[in-house]
Image (cartoon, rainbow, N blue to C red; front, side):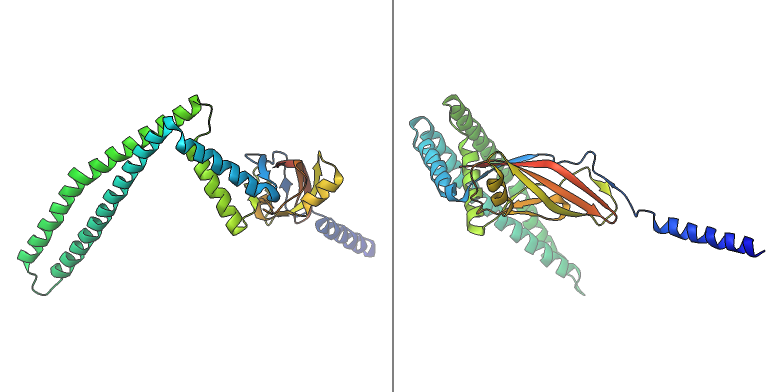
Length: 267
């Protein structure tokens, strides 16, 4: 009987030990990656030079004899469109005020139905102007502006020049980045399956410019939730290619994603 009791105790201890040895959750990074796995960024010391170059290029396009007339037409139409949109906004506000006044009158103890009818007539008149005059004119102006934009882009392409509207966006984006010290940022990483919470860390950086350059670049790198990678805007490492490796962890699991993202640092 004692032998049987000892055997049961030993069996129970073995079962408890086996339970403690079970790994919690899971982590699958076999297909992990970014939708776009590379990003061109600019050395901080050359951002000002890049901005000057972009602005010079854009100014040259604006003053180009073949394009100047098209830009003037587009600007004139844009002014007309903004004036129309201001009128439409004012009419929307007036119509909303009429509707509120009608609701108040309808909710009164003794509604003045003549007043309600008068308010309704004003609202109908505004709606008629909006539908038959303002909205068609808005669509017409927008179509003319888009047609001019297409013509300008096509002309620039034929001249072997950049799209001026894309240049304007890039200049605005770069200026905002400089003013707000916004870091260069990747998207979140995808196709990582596992038990939450998951944590992401910078594992290493390698570069075609050598170990010292890689070490310097790594000092500007930060990894946050979802595997999003930030590179400080003031990065001034040597121009070159930098491959970032990440480490992903959750409870009881860890995986390293080698060279999962490449930053192309340009002068």
